[in-house]
Length: 168
Image (cartoon, rainbow, N blue to C red):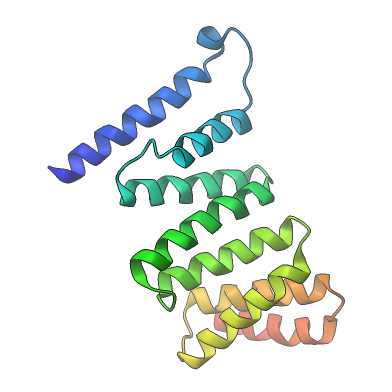
């Protein structure tokens, strides 16, 4: 029953956003980024009271922003997801680590590679401490390599790229 209620709420939330974006209703063309901005504002206002649904919507919002190349917006949405996951799961949880890596990547793609570097280095260290050799660990390592390359640290980047590729 709870899942059904969550799905119905989600449908109403998305329907409201998409109807506003309909040119026949709005009377003008509306960009997808405008619809995403409305969703972002609605989430910030607390329009989604269920925490699980809100987290999922923030994550979808971040993916959509990233798909449009709006990396600063994606980073902000992922920061919200990370903050909520820390409260829910604790700072050391794997869910937090995955989102932190995604947020750092969005940050780097938004032109803030130097700020993203310590986050990715810490994530790589944590994955190594845990003995993690799964896809998440190798993607994080590949992201770290890309940021190092962006910052001109090519030899380090090359070594990490090889590790990341071998692990995938």
